[in-house]
Image 1: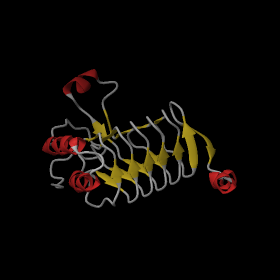
Image 2 (image 1 turned 90 degrees about the vertical axis):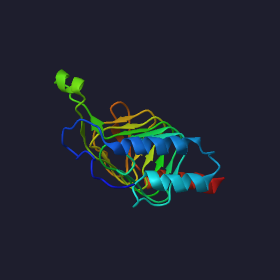
Image 3 (image 1 turned 180 degrees about the horizontal axis):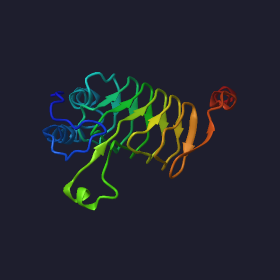
Image 4 (image 1 turned 60 degrees about the vertical axis):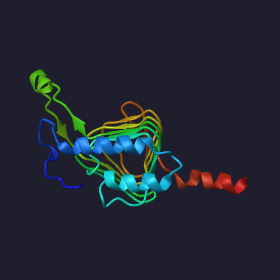
Length: 194
């Protein structure tokens, strides 16, 4: 199931056509039909879809993953409803990550200046890396080649086009760092006051 014999190589122009996507799309369709409360069935099928090095994690259906084998998800990560992962090349998601509803992780892009190449279906992929403890708000889109550092927070609706450093809070289209996580502003203090 997890053989990489006909998968596109990162950073190399190619015309898609891997049989792996057909297998994965069928498994994802099956996954999306499982009752969300049947965690055991979801976990077993998710293990068949994503990279075997992934830890125990939770992905709420419905979801869409293109290849599956190129996506590694760290333990204790939660991915909410409606995620789309176009993992033409590697998508690495760290531990304790929270991904809000309707997020998109897109590793692939198409020719911009060469209309004929675009018509012929050429594409190129660049890996996405999401560090440990990251939170992506609802409707965030992460574009090809982006790395998001540990403990970063990306505001809802943002489009991440460039790397985001660790502990940064970024938002907007395109996402820009607005400040850094400040332990002095910890919500835990509010929790203690309740």
